[in-house]
Length: 463
Ligand code: SAM
Ligand code: SF4
Figure 1 (tube, protein in one colour):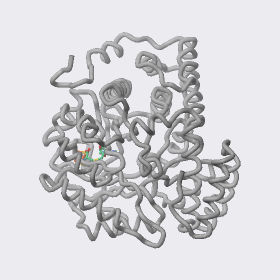
Figure 2: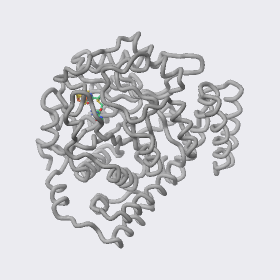
Figure 3: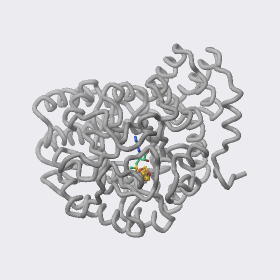
Figure 4: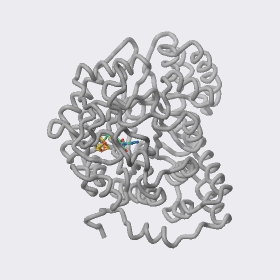
């Protein structure tokens, strides 16, 4: 039965598991992991058992399984994007966020269309092809019109060979009609994080404003999918409630969408709370997640929902990001600023402090140096391989048929147009090595052809 307070998140069931489950024996963990290695996902009950694991060797075993699944399904490619913050005005009062309306410690700003163009030009001239448009919730009735104009402005920017090819969007939830308009504006993924699925914590953390309504926030993805947005991205802000509660509830959300729409979320974001100006909660999160548990979270999600993309942001340090890639992360932000105007100007009014301050080129050199292929690919979305079509494609090995070639060609574009001399040398060597790894002769031949075409000036070639 749907609870009017908590919607389809069955709190009683989760509390029951948390109160009654002892850590599993080694043999049980082994059995669950061998099931996971079939790469079809595992049951909610199996995930619950893994969440109870505390033994270090067993955690290592979960991480090894996650690494095998990640490598088998996604190969070495890592999709890169940059957030583009357009407004830090907000009428909500989320205690962990610097943008909340009662915070007087930051200066407020909403970018006009010229400023959005300038920010986009800055990102494009560094080599970005994918942005995540982010906004506080302070624009009221005009928010949707403003966001749609912003999307148009961003897609319009062309500098040399550069342009933004996919805009994902993280803005306040809308009614179905509003989501239809967003779809028509050609957004990629609509992202919204529940922050915490734990009702009492949610009510404590969201004191006023539209976001204080737990169920309205929770059902946003239902409305987005009803409106025809195929790719939605969910997430938890780790640190607010017990992470084991959050993962169980997050998977209930995933299964709810699968049951209702035949396909779950395209991505899961896993931010941890970072220090934010004027926010005590952000400095002392009630359930801070330590690195060891964060690794466990990533690994358990990877084995539980192998085909759902997992996003990590600049919030994490370079070291944690590298570990996270091997455990299952498939998308990362790079060279980010979290304040409106932050790419063209200073960084006052930021949402939270960043753990990774490196430029896009430095991040790329580092990623490539560790054998990962930075990808700016937007092929699936532009060829309509979204929602259930994408999930059908994402069978072991199959994703690599498209993702690896498209990663190589978009990386090649980056090396031709934007890379520093050192990154270019390292990148070319990586492309040569990875091209040889493409198992299908025809696809390898096509990719090799496309790489040559890019060298001679062609752009935007994808399979
Ligand atoms: N206003 C929209 C919302 O709240 O959904 C979208 C923009 S909000 C700036 C984007 C995300 O930033 C939030 O969903 C939250 O998870 C994250 N966030 C807020 N405060 C944070 C903090 N101190 N550290 C890390 N992430 C934070
Ligand atoms: Fe506003 Fe979003 Fe920050 Fe909450 S998390 S205060 S809604 S910007």
